[in-house]
Image (tube, rainbow, N blue to C red; front, side, top):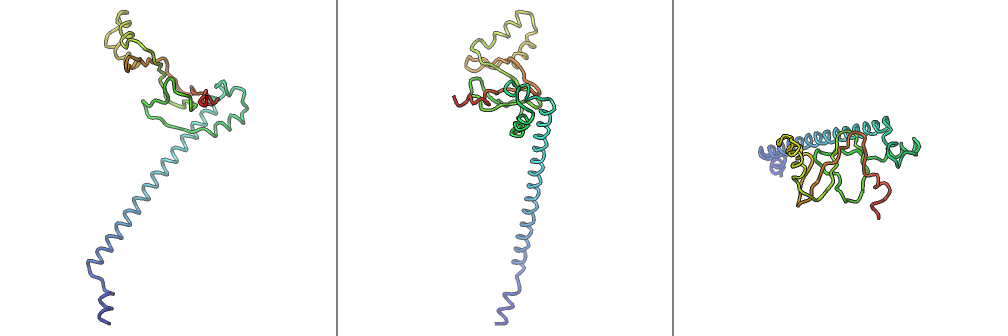
Length: 180
């Protein structure tokens, strides 16, 4: 019985090595988890800072009062509306909405630019041909053309404008037009 107890109380070097490996793996996982949580917290703090800065910019410039729908709203109402806004950083080249889509969101561009394109049926080369007839450099005309038009199945998406800081669009979404 004493011999049996000694054998169970003493650990083999293999058992000790396994226990140390498990312990080390636990500490590595714990460290990785802390690091991941710190990264998420930093990202969340940055997102909160950007949202607060965006709201402050909109407040200081009275951007919402430039929207016809909000012209007659009180400062308190504007503040309530601002508190309900969501800040969203959009990667370059992202399409926010397409012509013909139902308006679901109202946007204010806090910083950056947004191209506005309309779809028209027609010859993709028509604008390029007009430029060439006016004597513009063919390469320059082609580069400008690539920025202004995209053709898909004979439908041309022609750039008609650019929205910039504090411009807005999609206000019909606030009127519930998407329910009709």
